Image (cartoon, rainbow, N blue to C red; front, side):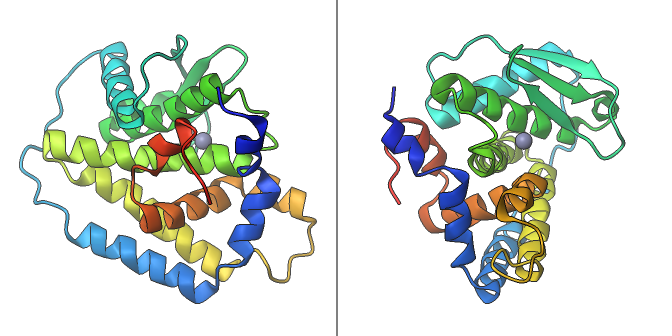
Length: 230
Ligand SMILES: [Zn+2]
């Protein structure tokens, strides 16, 4: 178990201050970095994914994410299909250790697996650090998007299906474009805590997209094992 001091470096205030120091031009440069990664994806060879049950798919995702993060054992995690809005993907319910997945993802095998990886990352973070999620929402979301990117890369290699990486990186690039236009230091009428509450996904994703570009995808494993330092 890591110390409270270690976790303090991931609090919303600290992370948001870091984002404010990054210029819009730098955000554009990071977007360009990911555009280049996208441009070097392999050609699709085996577009078909195996037909398996939902639980089998989830077990596969868990194995991939556990391996990426060097996780030996996390608490049991459940999945449940529910009806959600058209633009919703999934949600992790801390109190019942359950991932809710939007039923519509059943027709989209790529998004289904990516959403599982994202929500399962929330579960891992929660069981390892037991965070107060509202105080660490940027960290929580940024970490989950990062794990999703890493899992996407594994899936792309495993199934020779670059669609996984494409979907994930296009989201990251879009998000970096968004932040370069909505810079965290400029011109908001809303108080900072409200801004963070409204845009935890975007700010968190951007922050970790930057850190990952700088330090490589091993970052998430290091964070989880108490080895990360600013
Ligand atoms: Zn999330």
